[in-house]
Amino acid sequence: MFSFHVFDPPMGRGFPNRFSTQYRCYSVSMLAGPNDRSDVEKGGKIIMPPSALDQLSRLNITYPMLFKLTNKNSDRMTHCGVLEFVADEGICYLPHWMMQNLLLEEGGLVQVESVNLMVATYSKFQPQSPDFLDITNPKAVLENALRNFACLTTGDVIAINYNEKIYELRVMETKPDKAVSIIECDMNVDFDAPLGYKEPERRSQNQDEPTEEEPDPSSYADMDLGFRAFTGSGNRLDGKTKGIEPNPVPLAASDIKRGIPNYDFKVGKITFIRNSRPQPRRVIDDDDALNKFIAFSGEGQSLRKKGRKP
Image: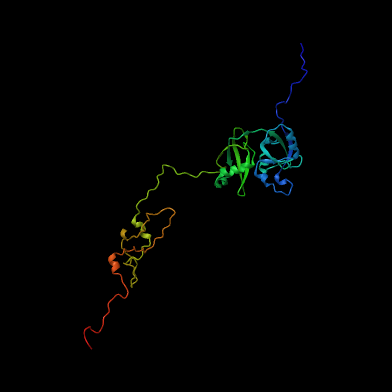
C-alpha cells in the first residue's frame, strides 16, 4: 500500500551551470592604472575581477562568454561580453553608454549572469541625430565599430566613435531574437530615419515645369547698348521747358547685341573665346615656290654701253 523512494532522482545532470553574481559597477574612467582604457568606451564589453574567471573556468559554460546585466531597481537589462579580468574584487567596469541604458550610477549594484545567445542575422538601427547622415559610408563605419561589440539587445542605445565624434544609435530590431550575438556572423544591417530628420519638400507632379520662351526685345531696354543719338534733353535760353523732352528713336530688335551661345559647350571644359582668330595656314603651290624671293639673284645695270670705245 505504501511505496518508498530510497534514491532521489538526479538533479541538474546534463544542464550547464550558470554563472550569477552581483558587482558594484563603475565607469571605465574610474579604472585605476597608468594605461588609458578609452578603448573600452568604444565597445560593448566589460572588465571583471579575476575571481570571475576562476569561477567561470570551473563551470560548464559555452564560449564566447556572454553575460546578461540586470539592474533590479529599475528593471533594466542588457547583454555584453567580457574584455579582461583585471578589475578589483567585487567591482566591474562598464562603458558609460551601458550604464546609461541600465540607469546605473557610480557604485550601483548590477546582476551579472552568463547566457547563451543566438547568432544574429539581421539588425536595424536608428541614429539619434541627423548628423549621422554626414558620414559618407555609414554602413562601413558601423561595421568597423561593431567589431568591438559582442552582442546586441533590442532597445539599447549604443555609442560609436568616428572622426573624434560620438554617434548614438538605437537598436530598433534584431533577428532571430531580441538579444543576439554578433561574433563571427553574417548580419544584414538596415537604418531607420534619424531622430528629428525632416524629408525635403517635393514639388507636386501636377505643377508644370516652366518652358523657355522667346524673350521680348523690349525687355533689353535697360541693357547697356552704348551710344544712341538724340536721346538727351535740351535747355532753352528763355528758361521754358516746352519742347525739350527727349524723343528717342524707338529701339529695333536689330539694334540689340546679344551674346552668341556656345553650342559646343561640354561640362567640365572651359573655353576662352578671343576676338582675334588665328589665320589659317596657306598652302604654298609649286609656282609660288619658284617665285619665292632669292637674295642677289637680280641683274645689274652699267652706265657704259657695250661695244663703244672711249
